[in-house]
Length: 173
Image (cartoon, one colour):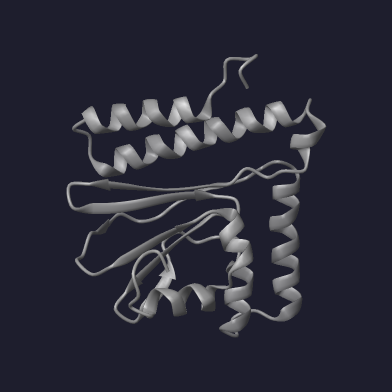
């Protein structure tokens, strides 16, 4: 918002520059990234209260932090980060599709999945997007990470993403 002097890209650039110059542990930097994304989300929510075209949009973010041979991730909303390591394909950060996964695994019933999904959608509808972070993991050669925007995550199924990543084609695929 140029009128208010708010620039989310500028805030992320400042975080990046500060993190690059810092000798802090990746865990500290990860917490700082979470705070940066939460701050941006709160600003977007505040702006959306007065702008009708923003009220229907839910903030979404996905980003990774790589530091001294380790990787960690942060996401919010419908953006996702996938990790393919050998035959293991999983989300780097748990997301809102948890109810669907628990249902597929037989851990919860379809009624429980509906309740859990409704709660999550209600929280998102109220503008409360939760910023989630992953564990810190060592970087390993051959591991593939894919950051998906909310548009890609909503348009392509997890099975489709898995098939593409496993196809051993180039990264453009």
